[in-house]
Length: 390
Image: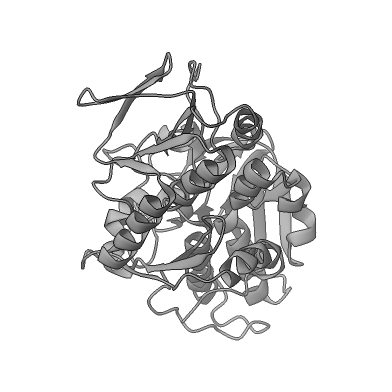
């Protein structure tokens, strides 16, 4: 009997999960793997930064989805309009899909609700922000003031605002200040990385304003919740990261408005046939939002589902149940003249045992080259389903 796994979202987590399931199924008829996404392309989201700063073409960081799918993955394009876990079904512009297992990897909606105000959308966390930010940088110079920072605590690739600010300082020679909810640069990532990032900012002449919870940005001024103000000529602010509306109005969310997730299975506590991975799972697991982390989570979930659904099938030797998931996230740090590599193991916070275990590699120019190689490797291996497992 054929079982169906529906994967929602073809970002890092969803694409990796679908491809790994296909690899586990071995092309056999026992598993119907359906990958649903509104787009027909997969985008390497960190590519928005070189698009803004270096003028890199958008085509370098996106690929047709069909070129990245393993045989055995069925692609369905359309908008998801409803989740009904009580009936084990998903509704959308494509119709209704019933499932035996559902993997929710829809990511987050990134952008300013309604009118962004006079600050505009200039941060490279969206395509529009990267392109508008590139244009804004060309008009800045010595004597201008630039404010860089996130609109909230949870956002993709948290370390990126810091080396972005350093790169903007070098490119424009403007005065650059970072506003951030953390008391120190990279505070949750440990004393070593925090001290190294603080030194990086000091060396570049970039100011840091900690415990700055952004309340307003308009009229050339950013204001914190406690009343502090900074003037700006350009505000490079990471837009809010929100739960997609289709998830927010579903039974999957908890009191905080985000999906409930259990560790180490990534399953939903009330719906055992539903798994949640990637950015949507980050608040529940108290971990960062990162594509590499989503890919590792996807591997664990795919292995768990395959072990359950394919066990005992004559054409598919039973896979052993997965052990503890890999909870690794990596981030390349590129202040412009050298580079580094931040690795974090989020097993401890996800399991309630303490903070993340993070290591920042020594500064080496090689890491700038490695960052460019990683963008290419992303399409060739990271989302292929080969990454993950202990």
